[in-house]
Length: 169
Image (cartoon, rainbow, N blue to C red):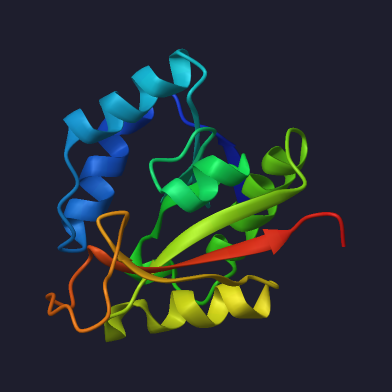
């Protein structure tokens, strides 16, 4: 399967919302529009993956992340990488990560990513480790805030382990 990765444009929003909605995964047009506004300001790069000419996923690279560990280290963060379930295990995420890492490497010697801790993130956890990402040694975070020892939190999309990759190797 041929996968094309390019910068997202405003015309892509309708197709992305429809594509994810058709697979039971609600994504809002306003969320994509906000990402595109940040892209216009140079704060984020938003990519779209096309398979057979149709949206298969999207992802972004944030130059100044909200997660303190990445922001303090001056490394960009791969953020909100999503592939349509019908396109899983077809190389779409790999192509997206290749391009996001290439872009990060233009400005930084490293890149970071946060990954959820519930079972739905299992394939992503495995992908990132196989790509050379390692924990940043700060433990878990919840909504980008460090989790304290003994703290009780829900295991949902807010609970993350942050990983880093050295792009010089």
